[in-house]
Length: 554
Image (cartoon, rainbow, N blue to C red):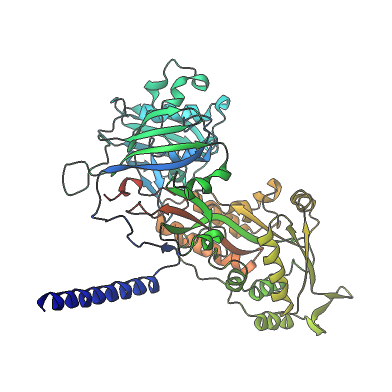
């Protein structure tokens, strides 16, 4: 009898516990943020917290070199961040955060920058790090024979010199308050390459850095192995003197012939992460063996007006078009969850542009009202106006490259939205090369196009008068007030003043609307279920906080 009662009690307790777990799971799903899709059934892995152990397996195509200054491989650039460090890194808000630098000073005219290195930092071969290494790295980058991808970072540097082992001084050609943002290239050791032919040195495949992981082994067309740096200068937290980071013991970078193999490698669990566009997230929904983290990329899509066209030279027409376009609706209808609306080519919610409030509230009726107040009259579905004695319809053509299916769909939706405001828009799809030719020849009304923003929140490529001659300011926009603001932004070192200048300039740009910003695309990272910790990628560091990742005992 007692045995029967005991069995019944065990069953009842089991049912109650199952109900509680199920309820907790539902609540977790309801509170899940769109950028944090985490399928975690705790299957097979008991997470008792951070522990120093395990191997992280990553994907890469075959490397050209492991020298981070010489490589053209985006995979090598990313993975060598574990081995090498820079003077600064960009945080999530796009602010420069000192890494190897302790402090810095800027002259009143903004031309001379002095950087003071941190103490007690050592290379993996136990040689001390110094400002001479930074000077050597800059010389390597600026050497035309090396064709470094970081050469553009230093194009404004006139002179640079190590003053003493701790101090580096550079002189700029023109004042640039964003200099810290470009000093984010990896620093390589001077002593390691002395007497070496840099381009042909075997040491390029045996890198020595200052970072949390040190090079262990390279096997051609097979793998690169890294091992945790027990003596990493930044390995201690504020609670004690024992090394805390990194947690993961070693990193194995598996090498493949083509990028196309990355997803298969992740599916077969040969690697622990994979990078995808957020539009592909649906393929992995419901999976309990992975987590997905979305982040805003630096790929910006926008509409450019040809301001040499008589009708589009009218600011009111451009304002009406901007107000008639419903960006949120475009994203929801064509690529839900795959983009974030934006007015200008600066990522929303970054320090300089810490908002996502759009300048125009979408309304087809208000757009039409604005046009009618400006003399445009209704005649059927399309508004007309007498311009120089000619009845001119409010009708345009918009170019879009035919190999970008998403842009083609967005263009057609924009055409529908403008029609509701009395504006006719014909979408003309064409090959990319043909589109570029028409833009260069200024034979277009409007064009739906994109750009990739850089680590510096510099929008002068679209909005400065100087951008017209270079061909980057394809609208042909020119405003002396905006040019002056751009100049002040680069000469102002006070961040609060700089932000105020930017906001004032943005108001002018959005009012005159030479371009209609649409959105930044989202990207995403897939993670194996075994990975725990601060999995929080962002565009400037997709392996953000890798030293705090860990693999639970299970």
